View 1 (cartoon, rainbow, N blue to C red):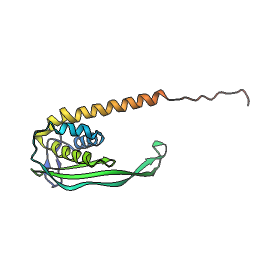
View 2 (view 1 turned 90 degrees about the vertical axis):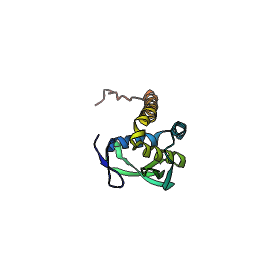
View 3 (view 1 turned 120 degrees about the vertical axis):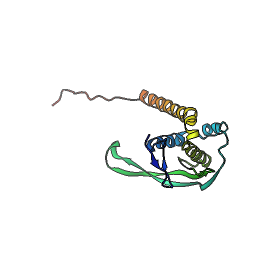
View 4 (view 1 turned 180 degrees about the vertical axis):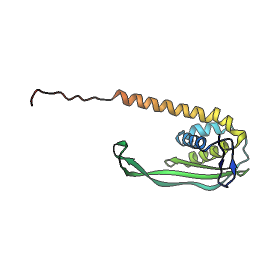
Length: 161
């Protein structure tokens, strides 16, 4: 994995930007109850302080005409964001759709923990990978149900010119 710089301009090794994007996406899509249940299994990480308390705001959602055409503003959606710092100085951020402040706090906490070498491997094996698998199964099930309702239309030639 390539090294990148953290928020303080210091080089971080052991994980790449793509890894962090992946785990932040998984944490944002996870159910809060799943993160809460896993929190009880963690050893004490020394606590944390908020840099930004969980706060709710709006974000503009953009779409594309026909899925690939020109972008347009589809509408606004609520998002919650949070930033915190672990006792060792590691900073974690959480961004989730909706208004669940606790979910956002937990996402920020796990983001910070995943940046630490002593937690990363265990968290990937016991939290991130299972959450991703669960999300992919739900996504596949939704796709399967949608495909079952697909209707195909045929145009028939009537023989008139």
